[in-house]
Figure 1 (cartoon, rainbow, N blue to C red):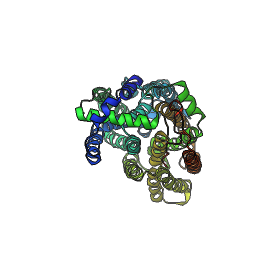
Figure 2 (figure 1 turned 60 degrees about the vertical axis):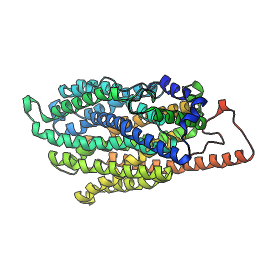
Figure 3 (figure 1 turned 120 degrees about the vertical axis):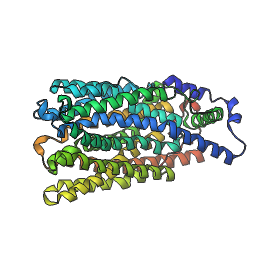
Figure 4 (figure 1 turned 30 degrees about the horizontal axis):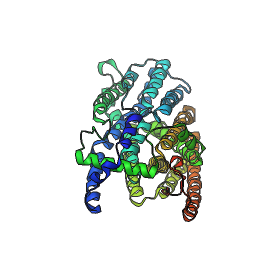
Length: 477
């Protein structure tokens, strides 16, 4: 969906549609709105989740390929594997910055993942990773902002959670495919890791082709909505605009508001910390299981699957409860200690059994997806108007993927089997994020106190100056 399309949604929510959109009686309206949201959940959210799944599958399968012999076959030495992992995020960031502002219809060319199967050396691996980052950098910010323009603020948390659930499922799905492809080793003269790239890349191409046509341009042309649904969407767009102060387009003023707002940088720092852990864990877990825990290649592939499935399940439950009770702080604050304990166990790996270390991986997956997804949802729903939200999300996602660059450098082969640098960095990141959430909660509380006083004193903000700092705008805590 383009920025122009978002503008058209809000422009068309004129006063002449308001009465038509409201059914007789609040209860009836609530039922019809619930049916509308259910349609969005059936037709829109799964498509974005599926695209996120294959996107993370493409970037993360290098960890599984490394355990299947890619490093030896193409002659990687020293830190070249780490460089190849990190370099993906350079072009990813460059593509992500403008895409957060100029949201366009998905998807872009997705043939690059398949070409990974034909790499012959370090240079070709780096080239494929750079191009993959360039083409995939648009997806995630576009998905977050598209959801923010179809769902209401109180509905958004659990829907953004779908994207992070998809990220966790992609790692589990990647492990399942990698395990199966072990039996294709030598087929047509190709080793198994090449088939891993070829098959997963083809899956991505096919899914992206169909999803391109399934994602609606706007609610006016959405194939799954009827006329009554469209009237309800107009009403929801109008209510969102009246509360968020959205103008449907992006301005320099919006960008400056986001840059000057301390909460943008607080959430951005915490997202950087959390996603450094997520990226490192999702890519390197198969390698850690093989070289750190001394499992066979086959065991490392299938033992990673339940860890990521557990992460997806716990985030689904946490995201639902966070939305149900509107408690954003508690969701991230209570989940982080599980990951902290998990990394403490891994740092003590020389003194605990392999079984206990494997259990610690479940503790880590309990925390990291909920921390990252909960933080992003918290920022998105507490940023207004729409242009400021777009800028805040763009800044935060840029910092997120700087974390991706870092994650590729903290698990180095020479530190096997204990990987103390990687585990210590991840532990410190979660501790700092945990402290950061306490700080941002304090900031929100101070602002809410000021707003209550401003309302009592009758302070009114002109419409052109409206933002989430206005007295009438309430933060979700």
